[in-house]
Image 1 (cartoon, helix red, strand yellow):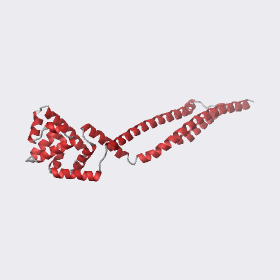
Image 2 (cartoon, helix red, strand yellow):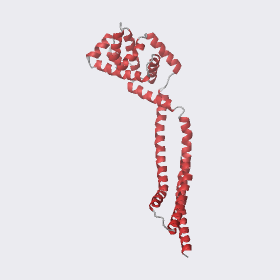
Image 3 (cartoon, rainbow, N blue to C red):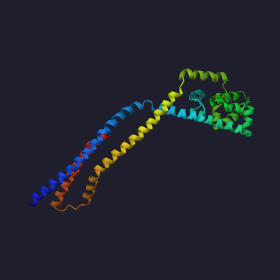
Length: 276
């Protein structure tokens, strides 16, 4: 009788745990349907996106740099191409343009050390300020080329363009015709990037940010469901570690409880890979 009573109690415990397991399984399956479909679409999209994501980011950063400098993307890219031919990296060209604008502004405000260098180059700072910065950049380099000594050229370059100015010496040693020829070569090689196409790239990058945010939220929700499913098993294993198994009854109770928990664990293990 005690044995049969124990069996009945074990069966009821198993039935209750089976119902709990089925509820957890149903919840996970519903989540899986949505997650798998969405993740499947995302994986396909990600494969395509990865082929040109670096270029899209580069164009987006280039657009923002041009906007900050007050020039066109085409003008900035052209200068970066000429700089590349002269061994100057794109970042140095951008930084030099930033410093150039500051130097023109300082000269307009009457700061003598800046006024002197522009006067030496026979350049009107007000006219430079009105120009497209990419054109002003070229005009200054052409004027520096007319200075008689390398020392004077270096001093003028560093005064106007900052520390990176020294790297511009190779360009400053070119004639206006040589600089123009490289600009024409760039236009022939690279074509013209329109404002509309660049706006599309910027919108694309913004969409990627929104998509990444949405999937981060989805992963958080999946993690919450999985953590909830595993909580009973973790609790059981903690109790098991604290239990003193000293008789057959304790063994039977632990086996029944472990079997139910193991069922829940196996269901979760079977479904989780589909969510990844």
